[in-house]
Amino acid sequence: MSDTPSWVAFGERSAYLPEADALVVADLHVGRDAASDVALPLGERDDLLARLRGALGEFAPSTVVVAGDLLHVHGSVPEGAEATVDELRAAVREAGADLRVVRGNHDAMLDAVGVDAEDAVELGDGTAVCHGHEDPPVDADRYVVGHEHPAVEIEGTRHPCFLHGPNQYEGADVLFLPAFTRLASGTLVNGLRRDESLSSMLADPTGFRPVVVSDGEPLAFPALGDLRGLL
Image 1: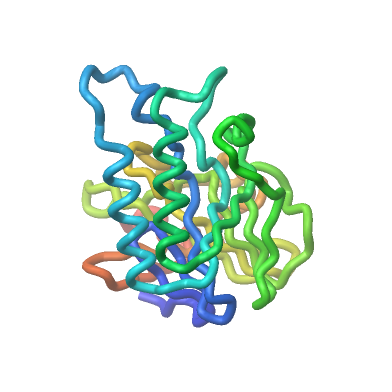
Image 2 (image 1 turned 90 degrees about the vertical axis):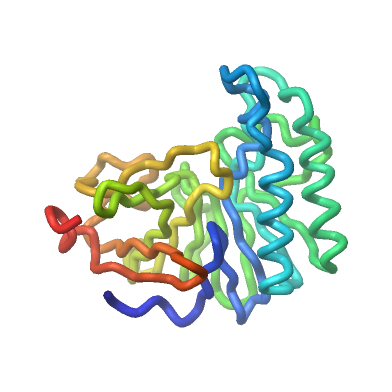
């Protein structure tokens, strides 16, 4: 197993950037519960809040950045979504942090839940946070993005994972985050080949390394190009 990058600390579906004192999460997809076909609620609000509070307690950031797809909206804001967003916002505020939200491809109705969004958030350590569904609108030393929902299958079990690509986008590092919601199954990266990904920033996946957090510890695997047929 290879080492993880020194500029980021890996949490449970979250990333903390010490030099920027920023916690980054992606793809909360608030409203996915209400939009599902199951008869009983899936506990989306309580689960998101509990895990966000856990990450806030672990890292105590001054800034929290949502890297796109805060909402899961198709036509109208699902019932209960605004209340969930309000509680998430309150949790960040109670932790003494500022919340910044990047606009994702599912975020067309953020105004309806009172959220101001940006195309990218530039942090003081040279990192730009964007969603990843389009090419980044700013130049940066590194990019932290969502959108892809990466997951890796190990011995028949699927695990949400990060994907770290050193020097993979115009000489800059790229870090893809797993979806923060647990209602998304994830995009399997085993055997992922050129131009099969959702994001143009992952057009050539061979140089990206999966990072799985297990029992609070990050496990960094070799690059995808070297893993084919091994997992």
